[in-house]
Length: 284
Image 1 (tube, rainbow, N blue to C red):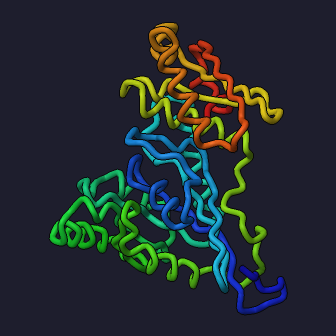
Image 2: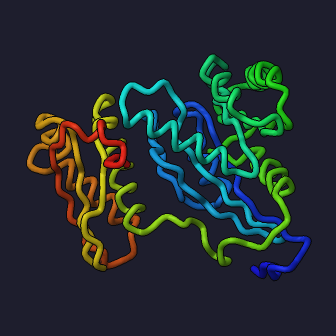
């Protein structure tokens, strides 16, 4: 794909931030718009813990999509840092999108997030594949009271309505040169991505109450050796993550390695730090 030169007045480039309640479908939608996985997903709230940028380069525009942590009522310093990261990403974006889950009642959480968005924001009602036309219309009608600039019903899972949304967002971006070379789909460092893949697998395999107590970080990255540390809050949680005879940790490692380039050697270790959520910089 050829990107117009930086002096081209016809090219558009900018940042689009997606905000919404936890589990509203932001990550799945961004992966669909990019065309490949750039943000981990799960059915657990607060899966996204820091803004993740996906890059969509197309003729005439480069759209930098920013997946933000779900905005919620925080109970820890970690939760406060998630909200702050989301707010900062929205403040810096050229276009803001409010993502609303069609399969959940429109509520105070959605309205609270909407208050912090500019009037030219875009409302995206996701998970159209999970509800019928009547339920989608009710959700769109409820969101219409916000009087934002545009409204799009979509499904990140099936792709329904996504092309129209991308066209609209690209047209809203300011004129300017591409920020990333063609072929770039994310600016996340490789070490960050590996740690996220480990956490994604743990979200899929551990109990509902445990994911919020887990963080991951790569401590050594010298290809092909990658060492990743899993941090939990209590010894009992360490035992769950390791599993009987190391079974859970082994299955996590196998699943992550299948998503890495051939030859990767991944080592996983588990450590207890009861205070990690009180130190926002320690969280991922």
